[in-house]
Image 1: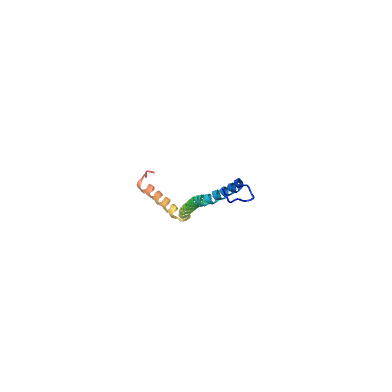
Image 2 (image 1 turned 90 degrees about the horizontal axis):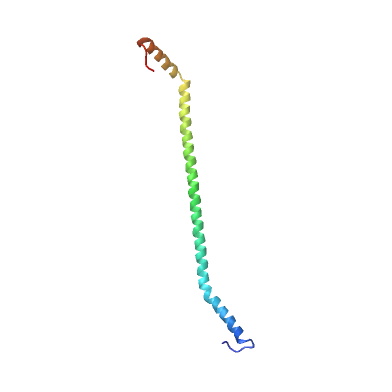
Length: 107
């Protein structure tokens, strides 16, 4: 029991035991808080990594699409240039000349 005081000894014992309990549990509570903060930081790090990977995949898809558009536009531009030239007319006249001179040409 505590030193004799004008307060009941049972009350001082209860207060003393409560204080000792709080002081005794303080290291465990601090470690628990540290573990919770560490777990939250790790979870946030993993979420940020997943978000960055998603953004990188979106960028890669956009680059691939843009490359396909450039390739198809250059192919269609080449076809348009060929259609505007006199090459198709020359090929048709050559084919007509061959058919007239050598007989039927299989198509």
